[in-house]
Image 1 (spheres, one colour):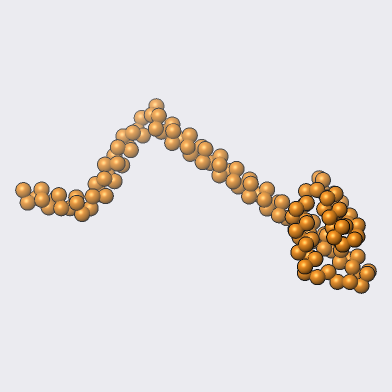
Image 2 (cartoon, rainbow, N blue to C red):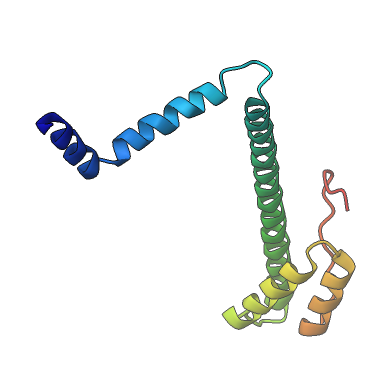
Length: 136
């Protein structure tokens, strides 16, 4: 009788351990068969997870490429405007650079609108550089 009381006291204090063991045994029994539906569901879930992980990686790569493109367009725009300003003996302040960055982020995929907005802002014509690997 004392052994049962000690065992009961132990189970009351550490009830999570026996529960984990029982759940583990049930899980192993449920996943044991080859034609088991639970195993098929877990395999399908794992495949879906892997596909989603690949999609997320691809989206991150595309975002990095787009960010590089924005930075390149921004640098080209600032360089071009600074060249024109140098001839006009003017300087390009930080506020104007921020405005250029905003315009480039907004229109980095549309060079015509980008050139138009920069032209309107500065009163000059902006002609983006044509690279050999530029697909636009």
